[in-house]
Length: 264
Image (cartoon, rainbow, N blue to C red; front, side, top):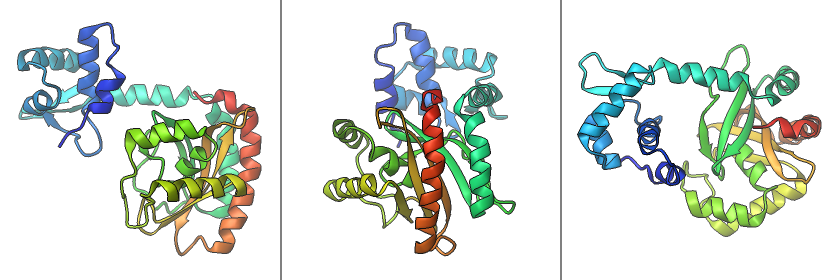
């Protein structure tokens, strides 16, 4: 079932009705709903089909959506990919982070992820992979819950408690795997530990077989603005390597913290 409560809330104060409706249409697409029919939009948004049809036609003319060959469903158009490229290339922190990420990748031979958070979710900005990459797609632009990822927990551990509570209230603590922390008090205790030791670990909490170590990138007030992680398999990242990688990540994030204002 499609759920657009959060998308609707984000657009509730829009002043241009037609633009608001068009954005709601685009927000209907996600990883689980890459192709949607007119009826799907109608059920999800309660917008009259005639209005939806006109809006979809306009979006189609602009290249933001494309109709399937049979004309019964729509999927995102190439214009959205073009805009994503422009947006990604305009993120100032990338030019400073990439050389440091390359050093970490050469050092560990694991996946390196640069993230920030938007609307209470982890947003992946950049990734570097070994020559034999385990991931078959680019992760840039992907969002994930904060409570089940090492980057998310690293950032949560350096956010004000009231903001952490707001994020939990909005998104909950759903179980992504059997190892996901779903208990509020247990998560808060883990964030306390992570804040003291300076790094977070995810052992199969978001993906089975995956282990990650992450450190927050903080501004001059100590608040998290992003995070950097080393990610690999539960077999390749031993407990000894967790401490070793955490030490290297802390050094790198201390450097990137001097450029914290370059996160969008």
